[in-house]
Image (cartoon, rainbow, N blue to C red; front, side):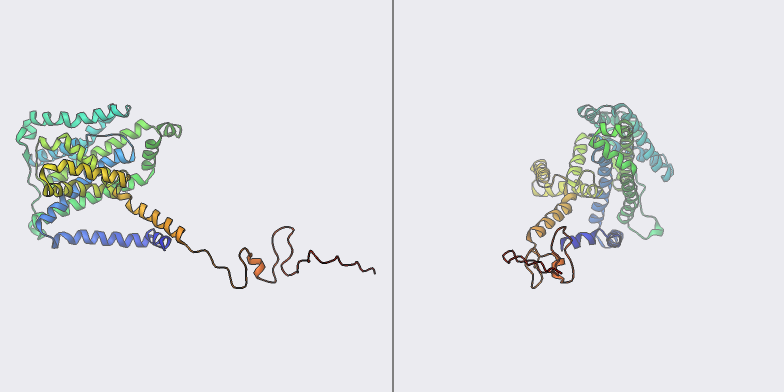
Length: 376
């Protein structure tokens, strides 16, 4: 039964049907849900994209990065500046992605040759430097007070409320981003990322440059971070130096681990964790928020080392194992004894074993006297 269910889940038509149902549910949801729920779903989409960028560099390539929140904040600031300068919104989006990508490329060129704690220290420096830098560049960032940009009010022709319009923008842009990253990691670049993650020496022997692919992965992660920064301004419409704070980067890392490193679905689950779990812990015990989140993280690491996204795989493995152990032995056909071969059941067939007695010829009795030869 477990094997049949697994085969069904792998059929293209079944996967396509499930995908269509999920997309239809996501499209219809904001039309029937209240405003707070729509806003929460939009924020989940924003941070799911941020976790996706972190997954590209850490989950798939294995490069430690503790500064992903810097690119989200940088993208938010570029978006706010472009909107307040009355740039075309398409140009704002393009500038946000490109500026974040260039910043990531510069950091990657300097850090990708390093490994372990060295590259971790460099990425840690990004949010640590970013906060005071945002405060000093007040002409562009608004200083300590931050800056706002309201550009996502629903147009009259749409007939939608503001929360619904913002939700659809996040769904469209975030969905395209997830699709592009999904295709990337399933192709030759994704395979190269995994080889670099597993063993850099093997990757070099195969003609795959670890340095080049680390730089590529870091740059792509930075661009995805810029997309999440743009979406952040779509939903939140305000940013400040607090957006760049280092503890947000740690929260993104925890969200990736809980959701599942190296998993597209895990990035979505990570976005849910980032938005909903702090709200839940605040409702339970506001003074113990960090403690409860730490306990949740430890429980997931011990029970599901691969994150929540690995749960279906573990269930299938245990289901298959229990079905194998619980299977009843095959019952031999009537009139046969255990060990009888199919050739022995049919009376007109012969055994294929060399030196065996044909099945349609009675075997000589070992206790009977030998037959006398008849002379002609």
